[in-house]
Length: 72
Image (cartoon, rainbow, N blue to C red; front, side, top):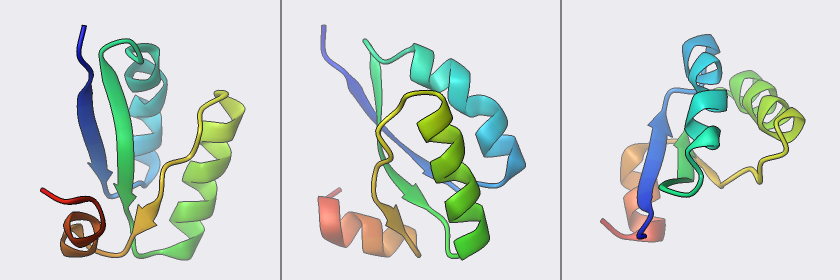
């Protein structure tokens, strides 16, 4: 079964609300990047992912920076 690569754009409270169900789909979905320019939101999201036992993917300031780093 192949995995769908996903990104999260904006990692505020609503994104963190959806983390657990997204991470529960790890056989089918993998979060490969997070787009968030705000350092406080980055820290809170990274902490939430760590609490859920997930590896924190790289953060990027913009979608353009993510695509440049990881490809389309």
